[in-house]
Amino acid sequence: MRARRHTEQHRSDSIGWLRAAVLGANDGIVSTASLVLGVAAAGAGHQTILLTSVSGLIAGAMSMAAGEFVSVHSQEDTEKADLAREAAELQQDPTGEQRELARIYISRGLDKTLADQVATQLTAHDALGAHARDELGLSAVTAARPMQAALASAASFAVGAALPIAVVVASSPAHLLFWTAMSSLVFLAGLGALSARAGGAPVWAGTWRVAFWGCVAMAVTAGAGALFGAVA
Image (tube, rainbow, N blue to C red; front, side, top):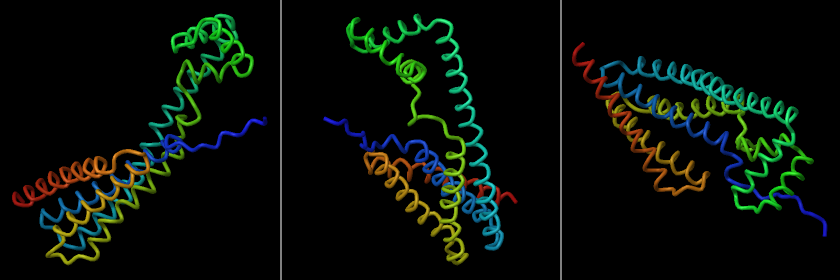
């Protein structure tokens, strides 16, 4: 019987870009809406609020891209360093490394004979790949991808930030605080539901978690804006 290719899709396959996209969109909505509420509560004019929020979108998207690229690149550097060390150890002591691999399989439930057989065959097939996966815990799914994370974060931040900015454009100055706060909570709840569904998590838990902490952030920022506006 011919072996069939493994084509099953797993939710963890998209964990790299999904994490960055959700983080970026959430940050875009929360930071921009909080910025709008803080400046509006301080008594700024409609034009100033709009200019501030657009500036926040540009600065935030660039910051997210740079931060994600640097942090994920650091992870990639660490992974490469571990792989280089493992490759050197395989050259220096291949027998010892094979025994180490067998001990890992024994600790996972295989008997010694079978563990030795598995370690021997995997070492012959791809020694470094076997150690990367079973000793270091590295895989193609969890591998660091700096550029993917940077682009996903920047793009999703811009999309998230554009939502409260659109509300600012459409709202009258008299109702700006109300509509920005309410619409942003709706946006955050929708983001929480979508991200939970994409990740296979309970939808209500994801919705509540994102909306609650977004509400806290906006309330604190609006309170600070009102306080400084009163002092001024």
